[in-house]
Length: 265
Image 1 (tube, rainbow, N blue to C red):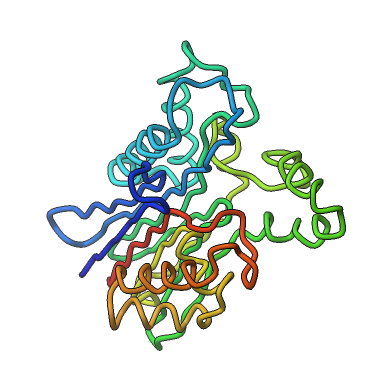
Image 2: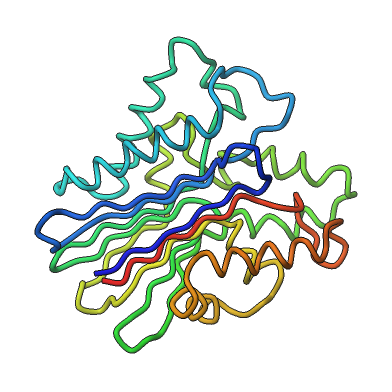
């Protein structure tokens, strides 16, 4: 088994709001990985004294611990418990009902000698390589599904339209303060014998495929295997720098936190 990871803030000097970690038991027969992409709050967000980076690390650490120690719980149940624990950690000091209380997208996976279980919530991604070398992306497309409707609106109304559907029926979902959201994640399980590798990545690295079109998911996987996670992040940074105004490749911000974890099982 080999595990590699890399994470880099979108803006040097500012906190990296992503969280990426993995754990393996001493026996080496299993393990777990967690990747969270903290949702940057607007400058006028109120209600919580804690940063998004605090939330991501708190939720990510709780989720990794539960995945590793509670084999009887599904990944969705582990996420629900981790959300509840994190909410309890600042419930007395913060308004957790605020729409932009700290929150994050989630990718996690857990493997044993027999099974690989996984979960994806919002627009981070999981890539699964099978034993034949085929790459199978696991994606939660609900945010992307809203974009055609948003593009039909005047430019000044698009962000408010999408924001109004955050954690709402018919919209898209992130891990914030409500444990029930865990049941809305994309989940699945495969025999361990069918899985060769797993890649979790935040949408900051997903830009390699989805924004800049440097290749498809299989091409990105090849870069990660051949050159390593940091090389893939560097390629995204070069593409961002070549289009700083977002003219050729429209995006919400010029640079984004980028994280990836590669586990070769």
